[in-house]
Image (cartoon, rainbow, N blue to C red; front, side, top):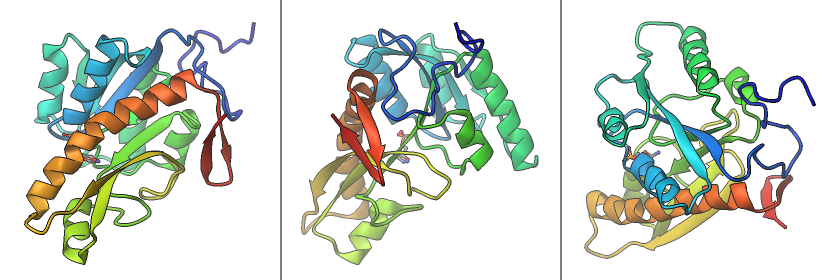
Length: 223
Ligand code: GRF
């Protein structure tokens, strides 16, 4: 048996298409900074058995993030690891230590307002996901729904992608489209995109945990 079995990240293997060490129940951590509605969607899908995983920890860089309370209400461990005023490496080291203690295998970013360093990403190769409220590669970065509305696109949506060192640049797992209506404001558009996010994120995670997949260039390919 390889010596890292049973340690944090033991199933985090570099080879494409590898599945979780326990295909029955992947250990998932969620990182968030705000309200946590995507966390709630993921937690619900896990609880209903739609995603074969368990959220073992929620981490926020903001102590006042409502998502922390939403996790605790569900009996899920939740910790604030404030990032303000400390160097990024130190903050990340604390977050990684918490993830390792929880033996997290997958990391889902859900409104986590910090970029991850390459060192962090390398701890969980191909096991960090993010959800973005636009159809990437259009409108990366902040306030994507507002960017899309202002640009005048007729279709926007959301993207679940694997995280790489860039800002919203990693390989795309799944996208869901949303039509922009003539009478939309940025807020009404964002609300309809959010509904689709809550479908997209659990679906993408389920696919990655239950299907064989590989990365071919930039493409995530499900065999
Ligand atoms: C979502 O719109 C997500 O796409 C973006 O941040 C927002 C988080 O919302 N990355 P919530 O905290 O999950 O409700």
